[in-house]
Amino acid sequence: MSDLIQQPVFDVFFYALITAVATGLGALPFFFFKDLTRNWLGISNAVASGLMIAASFGLIYEGIDHDVWFTFYGIIIGLIFIIGSEKLLNRYDDKFSIKNINQADATKMLLIVGIMTVHSFTEGVSVGVSFSGGIDLGLFITTAIAVHNIPEGLAISLVLIPRGTSPLKAAWWSIFSSLPQPLMAVPAFLFVEIFETYLPMGLGFAAGAMIWMVFAELIPDAIEESNTSTVATTITISIALMIIFQVLIE
Image (cartoon, one colour):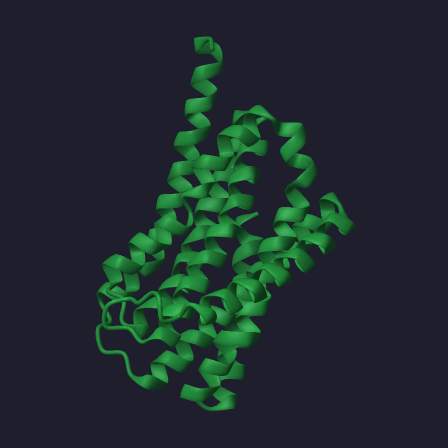
């Protein structure tokens, strides 16, 4: 491979790696807030729910711009995948454990990290495809995704930390969930036409999995730890703020 090809490939990988590291910034607030009550667990689940709902529909609208049916198929496949994953984890929940964390919480933590990791594959493809349109477009999309990843890291931390994970580990898991971005950006850059064709299916897949997780796991947990009005208000405000945030970075 010539130096002419190697340099752009390295640049794509490097910039996509920055977007992954940015996800860890979502855990920063928790280095300063130590005491988390059970009510805070409910509120944190509600905030995470709002952020994920808004992010999910952002993915869906982006997918529809490419191909409405591929996006729809992706949502259904994502739904089937996450239901199957939960059933598999529940079947073998006595086979794994996370230190000082009960099995129910461990399952939720694995699901949320897994969903966000799958979601990162689509963002990596977006980065790679964008660089095929030139360095300026690539840098713009990379910056937007990096900034967008910060509240995604916050959503992950909001689920992990109240359940016993340290802020440092939450930051690491947030970054880990975004590592597919640099891994997928390079092949998407090299084989742009193939990856661009199936991008809407990947966007729908991530959205379908996240929406199910919110309504099946996070919102019921939030209501269990806090009152319904507080949960509904928190989710509504979180969705509104995330929508505004998404519009501002576009």
